[in-house]
Length: 61
Image (cartoon, rainbow, N blue to C red):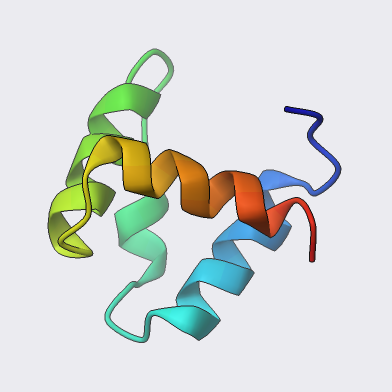
């Protein structure tokens, strides 16, 4: 997957699509990105595969 959008752009797009998300949901420490993604998938009631697909689709908008 080619990344064409910054993480900040992706966060804004996700927050617009899912109003239950806040800035705090996207915070993570160095080396803890996987943990943050796991928390996002739980909050959105999506599997990690579904979340990864959603993030990949954000690259095409």
